[in-house]
Length: 480
Image 1 (tube, rainbow, N blue to C red):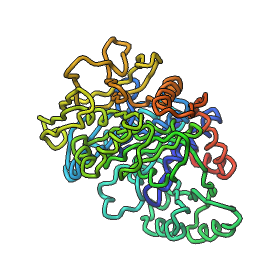
Image 2 (image 1 turned 45 degrees about the horizontal axis):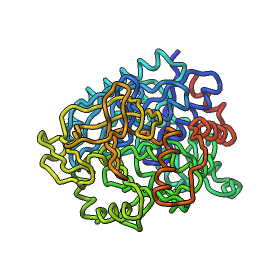
Image 3 (image 1 turned 180 degrees about the vertical axis):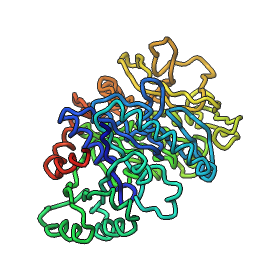
């Protein structure tokens, strides 16, 4: 018997991904085989599955919480903004083509069909499929093109639950307004609502859920409190806006590029005591470790980096004994030149930072692969690669990683390093050795403690909060 439930939102970034993640964990703990699903995801945070397919990072976190292997059917359509006007379409984990928004919408029936086929395959293999919506459930001007919210729930035969974020304010208008704007047949599908991210004493909201129930004629399935320092991968960089300014004995600066991708590479660093990770939009004082992260538009973001005056910060960091690390697009920027002869991004050529003896040519073929190897520190590392281009040394260099297949990845040159490996800092032994090396170069007394970053602990913590504050039994009944 097919069982599914859609989690909708009153707006973007209200916690749909987190609620799906929580329910994936809770239902797994009840012994169910659960699959997450999102028909269409617009995000620059992505992951490479075992078969080389690329999907959104949020669905990977949900699959991890459910204890199942991530696969492309869990996110059949991934939209990755390439420029201000064009989007790279990843269909069933592989690059389909780059299109404008209008070109994409013209093919809506095709993409809807592809997404529904993915859902049906999951529904045949799993006990439960938890479907995540996108944005608001009532984007009235987009209804005729919506392939991810209630039109998909109808096609899948799924009921839905609405999520609102009280931390943003206006939760009464958000919930009541959403129900008011729904068509009658849509309203029949939405069986209740959840209030997310309540800060402070829950007793202060006494009477609030009951007022909302009166106006919507739907039950409140609970009020989930704001969970401090919850480290669960998000689908986009909007969540970076909520980060507090950190303090610690060891400073890491991550340049927040306009098209930053896979910033989840640094979640593990934020869990280490006395490590302060700050995302920089302007040059600041030199840090111990300065990181140029991945990006979906390397040439444009490199130009932005120049215009914002970040280049002197790189040299200041090095002059103080710190390290500079480039990952993926950041690695490409550290070289001497980046060329785009095929117009993969915007075409043209731009001089790199000239800190590493390498040149990059962007290509039409996208590399998506899980990789393993041995780092220059002698530690084993595993990760994944997602890039449109090849970086070639122009002189003899020491590789950052020697991969299991015998090929080399990246470059280490003094205290400057670059690599295509995402997920580096999820390798505890490498992280401890690398941070120790940087601290020693900086002549700091601080050394990283022994640590183990456990995603399972975060998923269990989230599930415990959901069990304590949500009516899981009533939510479960919606699956019947």
